[in-house]
Length: 416
View (cartoon, rainbow, N blue to C red):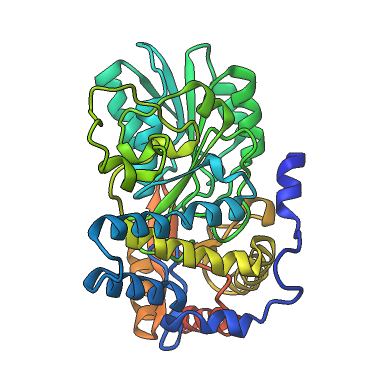
């Protein structure tokens, strides 16, 4: 394990000295009537985020601003709260954060921004979720880029295997920080070192990690996370953290006026100036914001994302991670005592919130899933390249009773 990853794996107290986990749990009304262990699919919205969207919706129905121009400017201000919260989560400057509509959106921004040449190669692992691969596989036809899939080893995405696969034509390394089917958390620091040595761009899908445990950002060029999983935000939200190298050397493939340097006196003053013309020089911001859509985007989603991030930032991501790891260990220890195969036998340094197990094959896993859902225990079933099974998502809002109810359900299923 690298030094950087070791540091990221240690608990670094932030937020309250001792989080009141019952109070944190109470912020998620969806936990009241089920054992929810499926954040890796679509997570639950905290009450504060739902209330913020309702307030925004009420303002849309009956604006308090004197005119629609002022109303629009107010909406822009509300949306702006999300980027600083994302920056706080990652421990980076807010100028490195761009808001995106989804992980897919961010991955496509990366794929379209990197300056490819015919014959370039992009390294990926064969455990990846298909959307991670799609934008880069499509480059094969469009720009003559060769996708190279590094095989996993018993569910492990080995940094050494990526290092061995690098060639002088390797332009990018694309990887999920935590794999979606078996929960393996990669050594991002090691991959960042490989990218630095070779000059490759490092693109990271962090949707299955961000919000649960800390994510390494040093040396990562594009770090992307959609909001609807571990960030507990709505669909159509997310953020992207860009490296200084991206901000200095790359440009987006699309442009919007809201990523321009703000005009003197603001947009309200600009639009009422008779001499304005589209025949002008356009100066865009040099922060990550220039990679955003730059138009009227998902404002309600951004507002909810900001409020959802306030919850985890209030807890502190390192304290949240300690909670996730402790509950995950309770789960893995319990599963080892049952008649199942643990697909996530990894220690903290290679685990976030996903723990998978199999009852022996797809049909048995499907039956186990149905048995658990009938007991109101919400989990999922996922596979990639012959790994996976019943997938359990352990989040910081869960508790020991949730884990014990899952284990009791699995034990009852195997007994039958």
